[in-house]
Image (tube, rainbow over all chains, first blue to last red; front, top):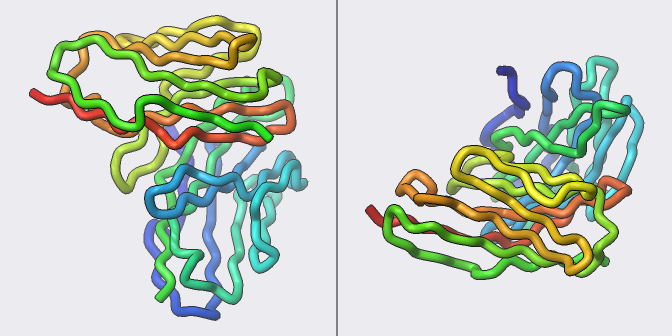
Amino acid sequence: AAGVIQSPRHLIKEKRETATLKCYPIPRHDTVYWYQQGPGQDPQFLISFYEKMQSDKGSIPDRFSAQQFSDYHSELNMSSLELGDSALYFCASSPGGQMNTGELFFGEGSRLTVL
Amino acid sequence: KQEVTQIPAALSVPEGENLVLNCSFTDSAIYNLQWFRQDPGKGLTSLLLIQSSQREQTSGRLNASLDKSSGRSTLYIAASQPGDSATYLCAVIGDNNDMRFGAGTRLTVKP
């Protein structure tokens, strides 16, 4: 069965650079969530989208932005990168509307290293 | 603000033992509770989802229970195997889709 696809899997950037992470949800899932997991920490919710609109916002820094496109894939844009942005970034998807049981299906994550 | 606590933080058992992982949360107004497994450097694998109206869910050797009124959930693993070694995370989902994770229980099953 198709799963949540994240790219790139690994990314190395320098401070003050910009990075973009992509997430392709499971087919027919219209809700996407982004999480950040720092070393030794549990995942922190950043932002979510339902039907291409932002549905909820967590602890996402102002330097970050995200959007969901017409094909339901989502991109997380991170600018002015800081060392503390080094983390594993997870994307999760779920079916929205009446099909939404709330169960989240996670991708493998994108590991960002800021040097 | 919802807080999720998992006990114990780490657990080491011999192969074949039955074990229980605990999760507690401070706000009982939840939408769902979901148990995940995470292997080192890997993503989260969904194990069981319990909706707020349910009391338990079972999948194979796993059984998860939910007691909303007391703010508790348990994950029961029967006949543990070395392949079960991983970090187990409990996540509580609120009505606004806000998802709060516990810090996890790191399980080691020794052959």
